[in-house]
Image (cartoon, rainbow, N blue to C red; front, side, top):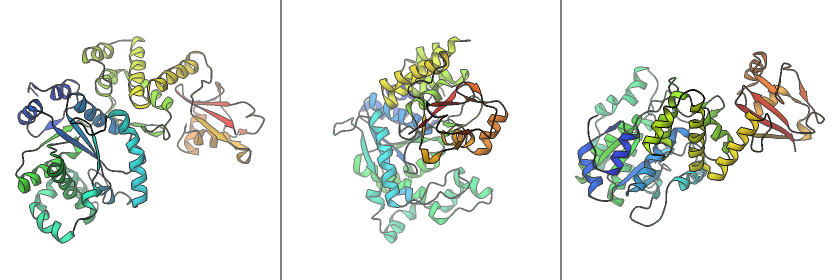
Length: 414
């Protein structure tokens, strides 16, 4: 990509590695230079928290606002009732309205940390597409909006095509999703003057649909921009760990575990992640990412502290780093380790169940394998007996469990 941007926002997108594709680099760059641009990213409410996989696009919205433009976080209160089929092998489970509302409440807590909401020109807006989707009249919608969509073209989109090529069912409900997402862009343009939709590269087809629809119905010039699919240097999808998703809400994943996830970044990914997930100057990110040997660990601690400060606050980052030093350098138990609290009624508790319930293994089978392969420790001593039972006497003081060298938890008696 040889385009040289004039606007601050496009400069940030390109030099920090946020940009995968854009429908019209020159025209969007001109719009960003001429005045305040309103842009949105949509988030379906499929869980009670956003996770690390969403963080790249949250940072895009943050940079948009920092460079003088207006971000919209669009909650999918309406589209979640349908479910995005993009690149999925099966249909999403349908959620009820109460669960969707609860999920949106959980997600809002995350956005409030990254964006400044309010009534000013560049203040962020939090909207919910249920506002215009819930009241749609089906026949009017088919006549006014549906006529602009070619089924032949919809079938050609990679997100749909890949599912059909594998001969996996695609319901009519799911097939409507891309029409609804396109309609969101039309409504946001009509109501709020929004001219840019952003999203992951898997959303390219849906974004282009919205641009097409808005041009046909309103004859307005609008744009799309996508971010790359982020994978780690070993090819894994960003945001997954052995213990599951890396949630951004503290009640779903402790700030210590969040900090530890970033501290465990591979050497090869450190510089890239510093550019994407922190606000340190690009030159400093490159310098830190180029460190070799044990020095790269200092860069990883900076990465963990910077990302945790943004998500959970500076105090949480300081506490997490102090706990890590206590655990790894001094062999202590630390103050902020994930804790499994059990009651007398739970006792005796098998060590296998303790490992699973503490989040150090996904199943009893995984826990037994961990023990058999000498990967488990109890109070920093090798754990070799998969039949060990924890009773009240054993839990008279907190018991520290470890899976490998980097994952730890405490078991305490309530």
